[in-house]
Length: 280
Image (cartoon, rainbow, N blue to C red; front, side, top):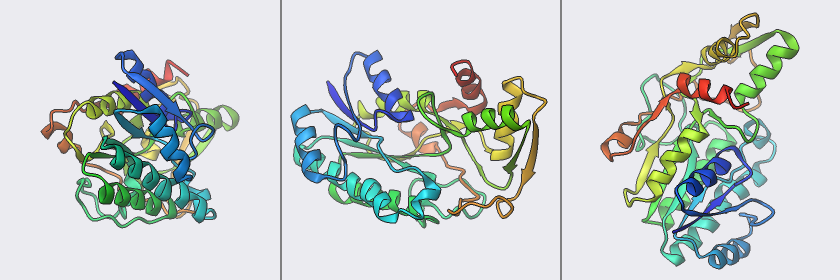
């Protein structure tokens, strides 16, 4: 079996390729230098030349605040790029797994979002990922849409690395305490994505590590597990923390559909954090 993985230089694509190879599955990783997803002809040429049995599409424009000033580029990558890949998968009649985000929801309320809830993005990034979902749904029947949130991995920038750096540099950080969700460790997620692509249990899923926290609680646990208990962590509201893009307050996502379809849910985020800190 051969699977093409986009965004191999990113946090998730890197771990997905490693997981595939661990299982003896041939993985072909691409990034912008190998396959510019915004170019439909290039996508067609590269995917057909590889001849994969499935595509896991991790590549994305993920700079949430910068997206507000780079709408066209963000849309080209997240929406048009996804459509380009989906079109080739349709022609080849192969499954596609598309990584999406909690940002497709408006972030109101407190109940966990279900996979089939109405989507009302709050920012450009969320809107373009939503448009990517629509392209997949429109073109394909053999697809997985997997929404993730608060991602961290070894290969790339993330909240944990930022907190550790700021803690060492300043000895104090301020973190929002009115946004709630679940961190997602790419190492754990990669296992689930490979499990999925080997089945025909198509549809839209949510996948994060188990447990709910605020960004403030996440930061406190990072410093606790890192042995940096002298770092001062101050909770602040979203309105006090200026950001160009609006963030959802409620990023809680229901993972019941994973259980219903026989997929293993990810370990707790605290457990994932502990394992991750030993690697960086």
